[in-house]
Image (tube, rainbow, N blue to C red; front, top):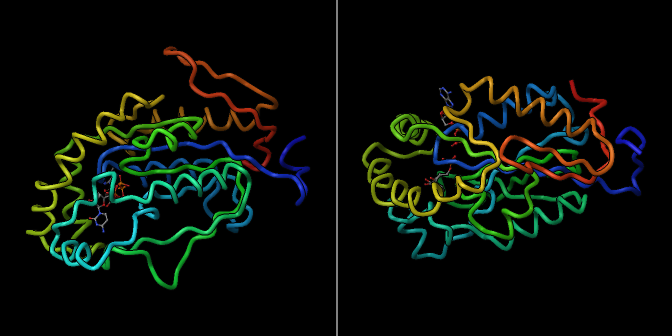
Length: 252
Ligand SMILES: Nc1ncnc2c1ncn2[C@@H]1O[C@H](COP(=O)(O)OP(=O)(O)O)[C@@H](O)[C@H]1O
Ligand SMILES: Nc1ccn([C@@H]2O[C@H](COP(=O)(O)O)[C@@H](O)[C@H]2O)c(=O)n1
C-alpha cells in the first residue's frame, strides 16, 4: 500500500527527522530549504507530506518570578529545564501514531505561548523537528529516525542572533549580549554541543551547504520511495530504519 491509497481509517506514521544545533546556526533555514526542495512549500497544510515544527513550541510556561527574570534577560532559556519535555514527548508520540496535533506558537516578545494562536500538525509522511536541544532528552532523541546537526561557527551564529533578536524578538543590544554571555554560550557548550555525537549527519555551515542539503533531500526522496522495511547505510553505519509503506508520488 502507498500514500496514494491511504484512506481516513488508516494511520500514517511519519519518518521523524531531528535537527539540532546552536542558536542561529540555521536550523529553521535548513528545514525550510529541505521542504522547498521537496516541493512542499505552497501546499494546503492538510495535504503536506513534509512538515516542520520547532522545539520552541515546547518552552514551558513561566511562573510570576520567572517572568520578571525573563523580561530582564535573566532567565536561562538555553537550559533543558526551560522546556516541557513531557509535553514534547507526548506530542511527538502522537504525531508518530498518526494523530493530528495542536501545538503552541511561541512568542519571544512575551516569553510565553501565544494566547490566540496554535499550529495544527496534520498527519504527514515526514515530520522535521528542529531545536537547540532536540537531541538532549533521550526519550525524545530515540524517536528520531534521522538526526541532523547544523554546525555553524559560533561567531557567525552570534553575528546572526544579535540582529535577529533586536529586529524580530523585541530585545535591545545590551540584553542580547548579556543573555548570550551569561546563558546562551555556556549552555550551548554544556547541553547542546555534546549532543552532536548523536547526529547521523553533521551539516557544516548550515543553509549555505547546498551539497549537504541536496544529499539529505535525495536521501529523504529515496526513503519515501522505498516500500516495506528498509535499512539505509552510510559509511559510518546504520543511518535510519523505517518501516512504513509510503511513497513519494507527490514529491518533486
Ligand atoms: N546561510 C545563511 N546566510 C545568511 N543568513 C543566514 C543563513 N542561515 C540563516 N541565516 C539567518 O540567520 C538567522 C538565524 O537563522 P535560523 O535559520 O532562524 O537559525 P536557527 O533556527 O538555528 O535559530 C536568521 O535571521 C536567518 O535569516
Ligand atoms: N523567551 C525566549 C525563548 C528562547 N530564547 C532563545 O531562543 C534560542 C532558541 O531559538 P533558536 O531559533 O535560536 O534556535 C535559545 O538560544 C534561547 O536563548 C529567548 O531568547 N527567549
